[in-house]
Image: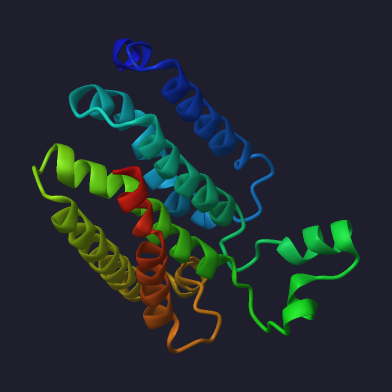
Length: 207
């Protein structure tokens, strides 16, 4: 893994190092240690596997930056079990008012942001993989992006549902983060798809 990491372009090594630093920082005075492992396993697995994966199937630095940006958002959310990301406190410290007061929110919406970002930040790397390694046309790559956003969001929501069945009640509730919204799964999938749709024009410009 060390040799594979050393062979990466400098910019990509910096991106992975920044993500690793953020992941370590998220464990300092961890407020929800009982679900921290569940939240951060995907990021840790990516960091361990990415040098080999990028050596075997290279990606552009832009694509890697999109993946790292999403995992950075996820890492921040995972630290606070998503439902407790203190963005209202941060906004109040900067502006004197909270986002919830400004927009009339009654729930924490950080998870909505991350689902939207998942769709938006998937566009460039998924399209690149579809075209470079799948040999698809630009239209085929765009359709693949939409299929990826829909299918992956659906599978994730199924995973959350299964977790609530298998895991202990409080742990499952904290990880799931529905916050009392019975349509949470549908809204999350819709936001991921919307993010992908809104960013699809990037492919046309970059082509």
